[in-house]
Image 1: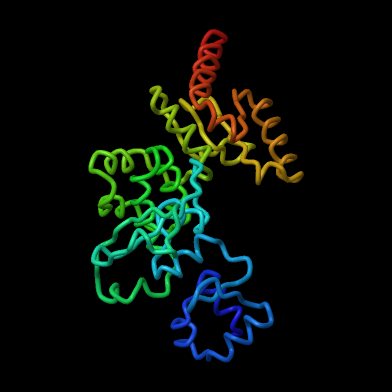
Image 2: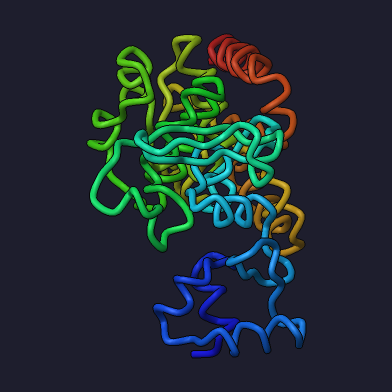
Length: 287
């Protein structure tokens, strides 16, 4: 394994001690910096040229990414704009507010001290995914925390039982998350739309199967299909053609359906509940 690959597996940035522990020598690190393969953003810290600034900040401070920063690094949805760097430090370790390495945009989250925490967080750049989502309770609205939780459950990063071991999330919010979490959700748009529909008293099933169509994002009251487009997926031509095929199949099968772009869902989720109510009322009159 090459030095660049080693740094990549450590999250794109590593402490000198981590690299020496893997058999690399100071002369190897110096050669990599001189050749441009690595940069040294701070003494004792080595990074790939394109490493994320928040990952570099975590390594420089011997901390771990958590909250929104960890969610971004893990590929979990972060609904709210937050450019701050969220770092986790053991509860027994201090950090001088005037420390030049800290910067002005760092939000500190504390984790219980344990074996080895005095020397730093170890090799993991991020805290455990369940801990990162737990810390979101300090910084985001419940729906944003739920969207990240749904995505983590969907990917199998941890099980639902971990919700009850969260400590940064208050008891009432933990209960709310446990009630509304759905590992079947395929996107944050689905989570937001589902939550709004449930709030308005609708029975909603995620990823329900419809004959001739396959799994649909949301099936409301067993009669109305709601599909949420995500830009990354539906900007693809093949995916766009598949959407149109599914729409035709729903129409030919007499199944009422609504399709929304992701940004519209995030901007005005209440409109979905109003539209579904109107469509159900029209269906009842027609029947």
